[in-house]
Length: 356
Ligand SMILES: Cc1cc2nc3c(=O)[nH]c(=O)nc-3n(C[C@H](O)[C@H](O)[C@H](O)COP(=O)(O)O)c2cc1C
Image (cartoon, rainbow, N blue to C red; front, side, top):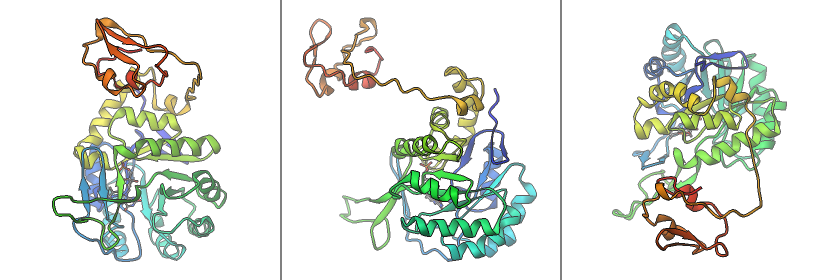
């Protein structure tokens, strides 16, 4: 199975990369991930300033992570003199250097880092929503590098399409979508306190709960601007998720929280699972997924579900959850055709797939 993908002259053996965060915080961590088989390396965001990070700063729940981390705790000098030389000596795949945030930062960071990078990824997380500011930052970066670079969009940017148009017209190669969602708030009930998020109390949310927002952002941008490179990120935790991002329009896919919730071995597992998962859904390569035109079979006709009796265990979950009060257990599960709205909830929730 061919897992290769390429964009802007970056060639990846498979589409899965780490997303910027603590897991890619120095060269040792990045080389660990190279060993795990990721398609490209992405660094923690490097800035010109020292971050002041409150502790604790990461909270993990069942399907989300909340964090109040900022950018790399290591200085530009440490990256330039220690981590990146070691990385470049030992790496055998593309390295995308993440940088932040302002035009002034870019004047310093891009010239200092250019010789180590195959591409840049630029966080816009803390620069507000003014697109003219972001446009100036993009133009400044382009002045200092010929390499591909991707602007990373945060969910608080009001119009992803306008953002994508602006940054592409100003010289960026594409977009990384999305950064973590927020601001959000974590209340610790036993201590009646806000344990995370420094003085403001706000934290950023990531992981599986943001996947559908990330997918929609990727899809919207790619639909409006088919020529732009989109790297998808947000909530990935399986090979299926990677394929969904590729179908939505991504040329590569990143993951962070999944590995923080399920373990760092998840990168290798997903890469190993990709061939059989692609095959299961009828694909012969990653490229085929990327080029596939996603179906959207809209209908306004109502259909009452059909029960496959032999699969039904009569657990009555459908009866309990039906918001239209249309399902009853008689001798078997039955639907009231007049009450049924054809909403589909029961079909999506049936644990034995007995409803069609
Ligand atoms: C603890 C933590 C630290 C992060 N640090 C950065 C960062 O330095 N730069 C950045 O662009 N994104 C950062 N992110 C955002 C991730 O790169 C990613 O966009 C987001 O978490 C969504 O992907 P995920 O659901 O796979 O984690 C961080 C996320 C977390 C959870």
